[in-house]
Image 1 (tube, rainbow, N blue to C red):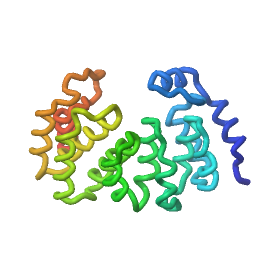
Image 2: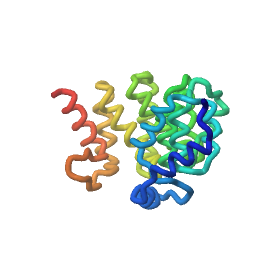
Image 3: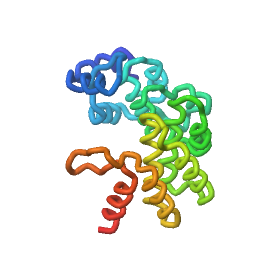
Length: 223
């Protein structure tokens, strides 16, 4: 028997946690939420498996937890290109989760990412650079394309905003990690721009400063 929307809402509500609600609010979320962490949502999604019809109903919600769950339940390959763009959220945490759970699993990832990074809307740019990270990790971009991205990163990274800046910086680091030929150029850009160089991180965490990020990951891979 198909799970109803009402049951999903009730199930999530019973698992909510005030600490998580407070955490999300500190990060800027002002809309409805129940306060589940990603692990809880993944567990719930796993029990219900992919349910594209249900996901497409849930994605119209304005509840943070319900939206993330909807991405986990979707069958990305069933989405049309207009639907992929229509479902793109505006809240930074949701944007990254949407790209990770949905856009990255479609055949449109490359075309959308390379288009979105030139969009005037912040959520599109954030999504585009998140998609670029996926493409670099999968070695789905040619060297000319990577060089063009490095050109754009060099010009825009310092003035980029919030999550868009973080994803752009992640793309810079990932290029340095994955592409030995362009590693020196990525490191030169990172050194000159010095984005996140002074950011303090908790003990045991990797600095988002691209130079350190590249070095830490390469060291781990060589061990």
